[in-house]
Image (cartoon, rainbow, N blue to C red; front, top):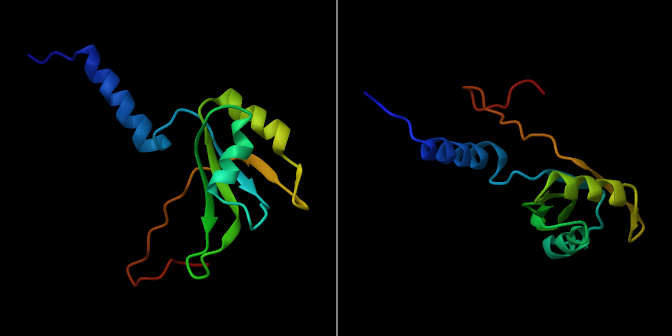
Length: 120
């Protein structure tokens, strides 16, 4: 009738990783209280000494086009991510005590039918 091949499971696994984990099996880190002069490149360099950085993104305010003071870094392995958390959390960078921890999953918020975001 219908035969499932091992390649199917590999394709399914790759799809699920990209769909639910942002394309990587590593760990996504939240980096808070960053100096406002920090950008994506300097953030990547800061974390690169602990392992391979898959991506680094400083969050920018849409109106002012300035850093919001936090960002996200994706490390290639969980071990690299834990090493970065252990070494960088609480360190002083340009007079600011940087907070580094595992990022929480992004929660999708849907608008209500009237266009509002619900009770706040």
